Length: 554
Image (cartoon, rainbow, N blue to C red):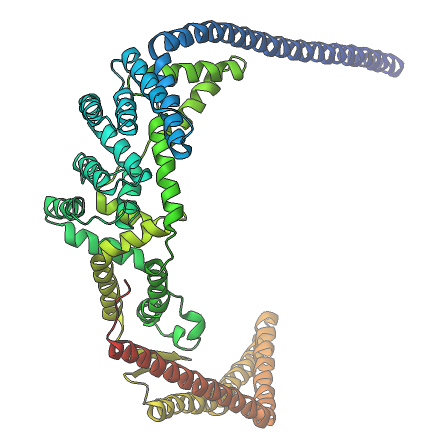
């Protein structure tokens, strides 16, 4: 084949390759266009899916809203039919209480309205209470007693509490204590709510007046005894609880003991001194609680609010349907968002629930809780729990005291010494200086005696071996051996020169070494002195605390 033919063939192949490349490029462009179209279609599908889901959600919420509106009408009608008069009774009772304060309503009017409501609410406990109040106002004792008996039959606990609060409001002290004692008798020592503790606290602080016949005093002692006797480990648990509580008051003593904090026994020292140092803060806190001013007028207002709350609360028979009404109203206000409505109902129900604890835990919570508690409740709690509080603090201090070490170990620059009472400054400093000076002499000997001698020995060895190597290499005409011999000779000469240089610098090097070791000695003296001074301070702190003797905090 001629050169021209080959060249033509090559050009032809080049053209075909170029055409093929163009086709590939065109195909790639088309592929990219297809990918772009697919991506656009995917985005459109995602948008359609989102729009569809949004439409479905809107339809669901719209349907839920319509159901809620429809159900709300039904529920409210049912409430009106079954419990409409309950609301009237509540409003009337509140009205009567306010009317008696200002004497603006006739007794006959109150009696007539009360009796009518009694007829229309045959199951509600508050209706006979209203009749009883109207009987008192009209001085009809027989009617009042019969009405009270009926109210007690319907709900004895709420009736007793309501009558106790009404009697307090109207200054009927003896009768009030009779009802309050009935209410207290219905309470379980193992299940006291914050609301109940409010009434107990009000009683203890004289809001109900003087309990001259001691009708209620015995219940508090009884509750405490019941809790104490129900668990053989109660005393231990209480002391442990307060011991743990007081550990939160521990003071960080590291800033006060910068030198002592370097010894390995410092964690035990810190636990002890930190615990003892908290005494002033702890005692101050509990004295502030015990000496807090109690505003009786404010407490009376609080108790009156509890009375209004008690009267205004739904009866247990209507709670379920009232909650249904509340839920439907939420769905309506949230435009059919049932999930949000359910979540809000859960939140509200949690707020309505009162946590029940045993009587002692309820009191302890007033002191240990992070929230701002009632001054009167905190003082009441301290009054009854002071014995456990003091024993818990004694345990906390005893545990801290047990951790205090009998001696400390001082570590400075590789030297260790032991101190028992902090009076060993001279002996420990001398021991430290001796150790550092010994190390100084060893370093000087190594630098100026052993090191030069080794350099001389190795220099001689390298020169001798090098000279021998050069001689042998020349004799046998081996260049490599000759070169190695020369290297050895040069190394030996270098060692000689280094030895001479070290000897010339010896004074400067020795000065530097002595200066470094003198600095170590001075630093060590300061460290040892600082540690011993702070160790004596720590021991003095312990001694002063022990000699004080009075470690009661409550």
